[in-house]
Image (cartoon, rainbow, N blue to C red; front, side):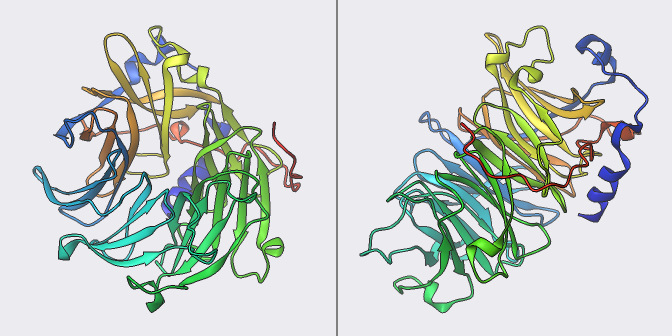
Length: 399
């Protein structure tokens, strides 16, 4: 994390190069090529989410399918399936490996249940997390995340019974064991007024949580505080509907919206310090802005600098690119050669420099650099501290 932060701080508008058009940048593009491929499902099931472990030399990935199952693979010289999880009876809204053990795998579903599975025991469910305090009726979940030390688990709900909740569980509590009840710590329900679509704990501070919602707000909480009102340290108004959210640096966030816009925020910013619309993703003359889409940002230096993964569909192909920001414009950092599907999610293995993508044809792809770039311009970093305003943004209804 410190390496990423420092590299981002160096960047900014010190870059002397001007903005480039598609043709002017063509000579600078490098490629990611296909390393491994596996068709997980031939039954027209989408792969909705992917996550993995940072273990080496082999690592594990998990893929969540639209048929409510999860497939776990070991990645080395090949993709080898180790177990299939079929215990979930509802739409999966998130998956994650334990940050402290490569053998524990969490699955969250929209029926209100989060399960922890032990991959050493063929995926046996070893813990359940739910809120059944209202006459046993579970609140439907839309998102979840784990703190960096795996002590705290948070779940974001759909708008239900007039409220949208962020629920908390202590992972260490023995009450989480299957069959036990009343293992929930509590929750927040005043900070969002619509579905909580994403939750992301700070990568280094276990008590800092950011949430995003279809109400347009990004909220940042200090969980050490005793009340929800005092815990809410910042509320950022995207004036849109938040789809995905993540930490870019220790004090800044990236956000993608349901209209495929990208916004970069300081935690205490009055407005986004960088914004790109869907039309900005059309970098080729063959790209139709209406067929361009965002996947997610990756705040990693595995490919030299952080990047944004985006795609575009044409009658002939499914294009996929790693993008970066240069002089306030998006440009292609890597072309990805051989993609066959609309990509739904992606994940990066840091040590091997592997980009894993999954999508609507049920395929897992592992991509790697076609050649090791000998140099990358410092002007190609993903974000800069453009905005300097530190005024607290008043929360208003975004639309």
